[in-house]
Length: 111
Image 1: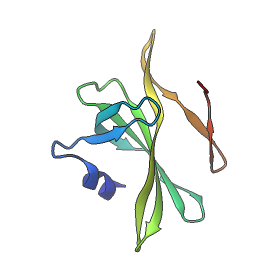
Image 2: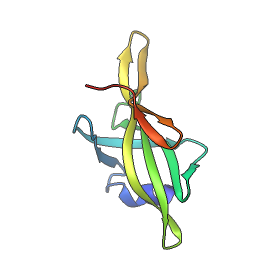
Image 3: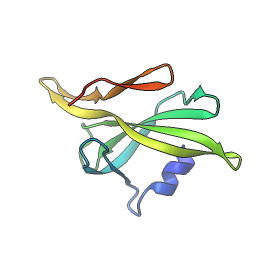
């Protein structure tokens, strides 16, 4: 995961991702990889990470990465926003878009 992130950070060290729901171009700063990276099924692995928009440390996105072995290394094959920052009376929190049922994604909210 660390190798992948270092390869995709821009020249300023930021991670760029287009949100597949809002289509917003996100420019974010890496915070952490959640432990543990887990095996989903067969040869698919899953890593959960936290990023915040540049200059907005309180707003945290939970970004999920799916990895599969390719040429002897794990390579990222899918990236999605799992939780988006939402504001409440008590401050910012990570609002989930989906959960996992076994190895499948179950979307929590339909528009």
